[in-house]
Amino acid sequence: MKRRTWASLLCIGVTALAMAAPATAHADTASVTCTATQQITYSPGMHLYTQTITTSGTLAYSCIGGVQSGTTGFVVTEDRNCLTLSTPDIDYLVTWNDDTTSEIHVHATVVIADGQTVVTKTGTVTAGRFSGATTVEVLTGPVVDVLVCLSTAGLTSDTEYGTLELFAP
Image 1: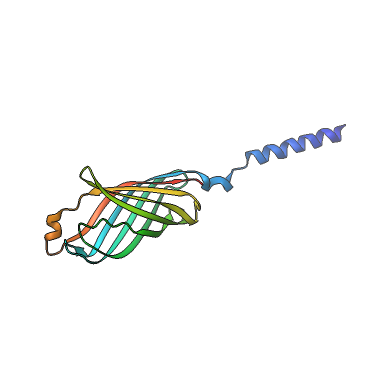
Image 2 (image 1 turned 120 degrees about the horizontal axis):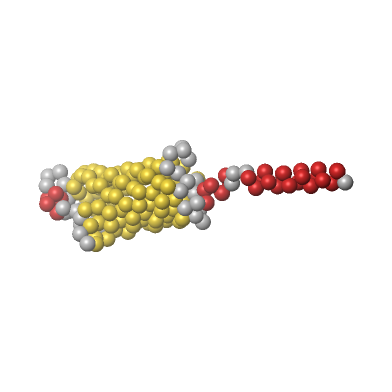
């Protein structure tokens, strides 16, 4: 009889420990929401005439839901001008504050609405942390100042602010 009681208590104890163990295997299935700041440079500066432009961007994220922050960058070379709304597919790598990374593939759409430029990037985390998550990033910035495009230097930089959301698969 005592043997059965000890076996029952041992079973209950093991079950309780298993239930109390942290669920680290599921830590990356949570959704993540970030504020985003994007700094963009154009080289050479953009004008009203079309030319080959290299667009370089850096993004900084401040997040809740699994990570605290992240950074990324991208470079796209294409023929464009100040009036061209660029809509490229972009692959980039986000490095999170804990040194993990997420490879993200997005399609960007750009629209002018209410006196602002709105960039919407939708895609998927293709590898790394949060793999399989759907991503939506919306960035808002000023409408291009045509007078700047007429200057000798042209439009050389821009700053946009917004959000990045990763939705668990």
